[in-house]
Length: 129
Length: 378
Image (tube, rainbow over all chains, first blue to last red; front, top):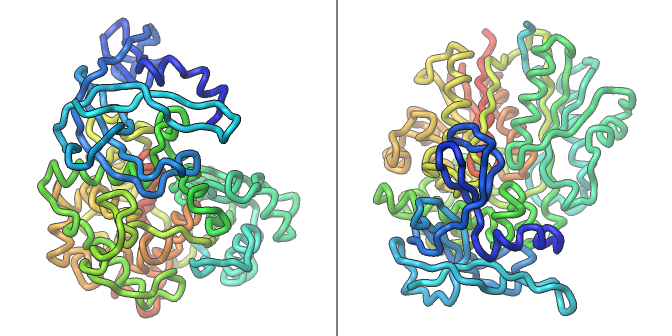
């Protein structure tokens, strides 16, 4: 994790702020500068819905070094209720509850931390509802 | 415009080279290719590599290799396209000659992975997707492929062990491949006994981490093998940004363009070196190129279509899974292997009568796809 890069994106990571094209209405997360559908650069901020459905999931036993202490990690592809696909972790996930089609809600949880004296990174995770 | 030929190739056996450095690997592959070419004056070097900065504290590989080969003064650079870096290096070599600016280009693909701790390597590989939106949530590259594989299984009602036919084919072909990392055959039952890394991907269904380097010497002067087409296409960077993640659009487009430019009928291809990093990538690649219908690649493989003796042999030296996957090296190994098939120097792995071969190398999950079509010069 890079602290300043995290700080720049803090709103995105905690509130799922994406974009909406003012011309054609297409929505995006992560946010864009150029609309992929119509090419417009007239883009505004748009907060994503916080509920969605599990499209796919996995249990990762060997995470990248910044997340090594949190293994195993449950990751999922979530189809938010506006149709946007988002990658995220599943929080408090009892493995038998996790299935394709299960309903989830975004919540704020700890992602990772920079050792004992570094900053703690918080961001969205999804929990089963 | 110039035609582009492969004059020679040079390989380092893929493996765990504890006593060889990143530079040693590149130099060994280069010297092998130069020796096999005879007396050729190189006017450009292109190095394909993904992670040397992060894993080996080394960038500037173009000048580094020129210097190590005693070729200071030459035009030399590194190109990067994640796991497609090697294929992209060959593409840039092809374009260099095609433009008429260069006559003999040495293309070297290299990755030195085994020096790194596994979790550090896992982070490095995830750099193929977004630092800001993929890595921050703890995803690894394998986990993204696992999510994709489960979407595929759910969409097409295919089971995990159906897809595990691809590593089985790869390992069978590698038994007699001198430069392969794993010269050992195994069964789908063996795959099922290995642990999950990210369910449904297991240790034995995932390409290994490897050290290796391969070189191909491209030339405007006629030689045994001609590159008829070298095409690149890109997809959305992140899997989650795609309308249909189960469609490998970059591979589909690159392959279609390559077929058109080469003038080769895709049903006349004698063998296919695909990017089988994981079973799901093998299946979706074959489907994107139109060799299998959507959802049917594993079914076709089970019926023997892609076996060494089948209609369309794939992974003729073991592919990424068994030859090994030194990331930035892989795309160059594939082209070198196609050269061996088409020049009749593939030894026990020779596809009899091979006249046309295709390689497909991808960076990320079909984020960049590089397709080459080559023919035997008769």
